[in-house]
Structures are given as structure tokens and as C-alpha cells.
Image 1 (cartoon, rainbow, N blue to C red):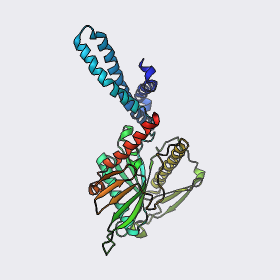
Image 2 (image 1 turned 30 degrees about the vertical axis):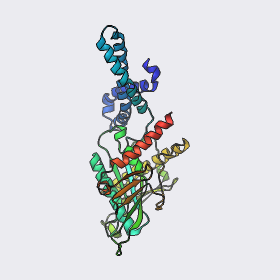
Image 3 (image 1 turned 90 degrees about the horizontal axis):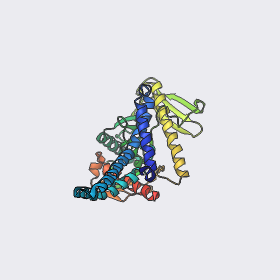
Image 4 (image 1 turned 180 degrees about the horizontal axis):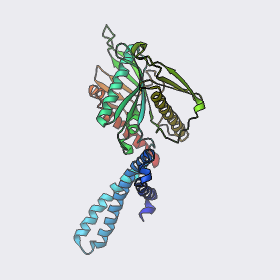
Amino acid sequence: MADEQFPAAATALEEYRSIEQQMADPEIVSNPDKLRKLGRRHAELGAIVSAYTSWLRIKDDLEAARDMADEDADFAEEAKRLEGELPAAEDKLRTALIPRDPDDARDTIMEIKAGTGGEEAALFAGDLLRMYTRYAEKRGWTVNIQSENTTELGGVKDVQIAIRAKGTPAPEDGVWASMKYEGGVHRVQRIPVTESQGRIQTSAAGVIVFPEADEDDDEIEIDPKDLKIDIFMSSGPGGQSVNTTYSAVRMTHIPTGITVNMQDEKSQIQNRAAALRVLKSRLLAMKHEQEAAEAADMRHSQVRSLDRSERIRTYNFPENRIVDHRTNYKAYNLDAVLDGDLQAVIDSDIQADEAERLANQK
């Protein structure tokens, strides 16, 4: 029986069909939050169901062809063809059943901070912001700058952005599924615009990413008494005031010490809501990272230090070279990568991660 060989796939199919029935319920349709959660789970199960139904079809067709092979030579040929297809379908199903990161379909909050290197590091942080914005555009995602602190030369001291997909993507197409590999220290080697003697300088910028929590996410509960909220004026480049109203919000979660600044929304109420959502996202990421550590699975961990030696990637401008130090990926198309052509680099991380998960299943 098929269910005896792949019971997890059979269970996934049952849940998938149940979710489809729930999503057709008028009560669910009228509740966007429930519909979004069900849609995310439906998409998550989709790859398993697709691989399982394909495997079942080939298996059933093979059995039927074998039964008819003695009576018709054409069926014998068909059985031989299906026997060749079955192992690949089985491997695909086994791969689909490997547990995915449960956050893959989520949207993402990203922080980019200039590290060692002064103004040059801030300019490089600005280059990374442009790179991720262009990459998101190529993927059909939206980018919303939530807070930004720039320099007079156009660099970025620190910036926080929300990257969001449209609709309910399949987990492998979710923002977090790709952007989670960007967390860490990014090192740049080039001649800075501030360098008068043409010497190559090394500087760094840090990137921190975490999955964005839903507004109604019941996995994280925040007690209002645990929040300290300060209100201040929004500011522009160089600290100059850009408005005369106290609309910017600094929200501190007292138990963890996590602080979120939000100033780019139009009102204090909107900034409060946005800050609370980012805070929930940070706490969700912290919870999942602790769970991953307990399970001896540190794929969620990211480099928090901005020391130049703790790098995940190097961008070498003189050689137009980019290197990902985790996968040994190397290419000489840095200009294209900085223009958003980042997929091949990210794919090297995805493939390494999938290979590790597959190895851990054996």
C-alpha cells in the first residue's frame, strides 16, 4: 500500500484536502487572517502533494501496465518506461518530505548597518541596500524602508526595510526562503571615494534578517506592561528635523532589552503599529533561534559582530569578484550582482542547505 510506504505524504494529502474545504467556507473567506494562515499552510503542503500524487500515478500505471504486459507487447514497453521513471519520482517525494524551515513562506525584515570603515562602510551599506532593492524588484517583491539613518555623502549608517511577497507564495518562493542566507558580515575591498592616494581599503557592513511576524501571530504574545515607548521627532540626514510633530516611536521590550525605532510612517499611531510588528518579528526570530540551538541545528544563526574577519561574503571591486565564503561560490560579475543579479549566489547557499538537510535525514 502506498500509505504504508509514505505515511507522512498520505497525511499531508489529507490535511491539504481539509484545508481546501476550509478555505471554501464563507466564514473563513471573510476572515483575512485565518485565510492567510490557511493559504500559507496550503502552499507549504503543495510540493509534497504534487510529488506524492505524481508518484502514486506512476506507481498505479506501472501496476496496470504489468498486469497487461503478457497480453500486449505495448504494455510491456510502457511498464519498462514507467519502471525507469519511478525511482526519480520516489526521490523527488523523499526530498519534498524533508522538513522545511517553517518560516520560508514568511516576509522578511532586514537591517543593514555600516561597520568598520567609516564613511566608506556607510557607502557600501548603501550599495547593499540598492542591491537588495533591485533583487526584490526582480522577484516581484515590494520593499518598504521603515527607518533610515544616512550620511551627507549618501551613505547609510543603518537602515531597516521590510521585504514582502505578493499573495501567498509557495515556501520555496517565499522571501525568507532566500533572504535568510544574507545575514552576516559583508566585506568590501575597493578604493574609496574618500581615498586620495588610490589605495584599496577593506571595510564592512552587517546584515541582520528575520522573518516578519503576522499582526495576529499568536505564537508571540507581548504584555503591554513589558513595553517602554518613547516619542520623538523624526529626523533626516545629519540629524536635521524634517517635521514639527512628535511622530517617531522608540519601543523597548523590557524583558529582552530589544529596541525598535520607527519613524517613516505618517503618524505616531502607524509608527507604533509598525514598531510592534517588528518587535514581534524579532521575538519570533529569537524564539526560533533558541529552538534551533536546542535541536543542534544552527541554520538560523547569524553573525552579529561587524568585525571584518567574521565575514560571509567578500565584494572585491578591483577584480569585479564576489565570493561567498560559506559555499566557496566565486564569480566575476560583481557589477551585475550589485545591480540585483543575486540569485546564483543565493542558490549556492540554498543548495548547500538542502544537501545538509538531506544528509541529516539519512
